[in-house]
Amino acid sequence: MPSIQDVAKLAHVSTATASRALSRPDMVAPATRERVVQAAQQLGYQPNVLARSLRQKETRTIGLIVADILNPFHALLAKGVQDAADRHGYTVFLFNSDEEPAKELRAMDILRGHLPTGLIVVPTSGTRTHIKTLPNLPVVELDRVSGHPGTTTVTVDNVGGAMTATQHLTSLGHRRIGMIVGQLDISTAVDRLKGYRAALQQADIAYDPALVLPGHHREDDGYRAALHLLTLPAEERPTALFVGNNEMTVGAVLAVRELKLDIPREVSIIGFDDSRWAQTLNPALTVIAQPAYDLGRLACEHLIGQVGHPHPTPARVQLPTEIIVRHSTGPPAPPGPSSRSIRPPVVLSPHSR
Image (cartoon, rainbow, N blue to C red; front, side, top):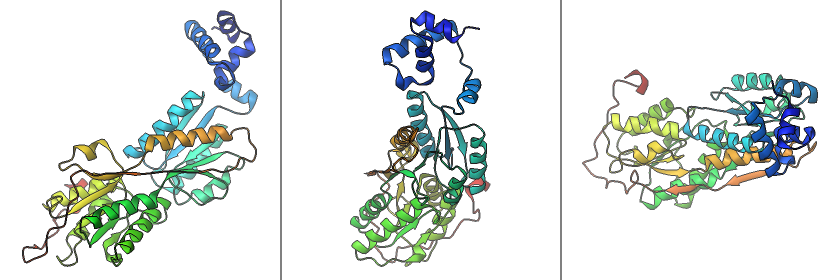
């Protein structure tokens, strides 16, 4: 098997430089690193990462815990983290919490045994407590905020995004706006509800708690909530829905179709998160878009920037959202005797049909 000395000889550098080029690429000039990498590839050299990690008592690995890897938003977060890690010569260990604090804690326990350089986590409701099990490890909270003091956070302006969504609907003339909000022990849901309420107040519309239903960020939650709201008596029924994430938006759209309602003539829908399917729906979905890839990339950059600093100053990074107006929102239908009662279907879950 070729050795690091063989790589150094072929690249015309010292053994120490060759080692740094492969293990600490940020410490070596790009041209030199490229020469060393080409030499390693030509020889088929594979560094013994485990031995080096045990010797140095550290690895160049980053733990990443996302809440739902099947959600395209979380997949984009992970892509941003991994691309940034690759550029700095780090490896990412990916875990999925499924929004369950117990799974998140197990992931952290596993990570400890791999001597991670740091952790990026999309928090669950248990993160604030769980982080205490990782003393002295750099941690960045991504997308959400647990409230743990001294932790860097990378999020979007959830309050402002929710205000923009609700203001869009009020500007079209909607007065009864339902919200499918998500888990109210998660910071994104709390902030989006805050933005929704602020926009209602700005439009002089009384807040009606009967029009706000929480969920667990899943498709089924959006389906059941939309089904409930849209089968209320005509005078109580919302004319528009603001849905708190893309998975619940899928469920809400399925409920609307099952009830045979016309979008946007009978109900307008705006979601939080953009995705490819949102553009291909008929009608295409109006959304509040988040820069998911940039969130992941920046979280990784900030984490790597903290490495080696015993007491880094925590950062609060907040990116803006953007409204993309498509065809799922429009003015409410005028009230009148034509308002029909809507009966819920017999089947109560999209997965059991």
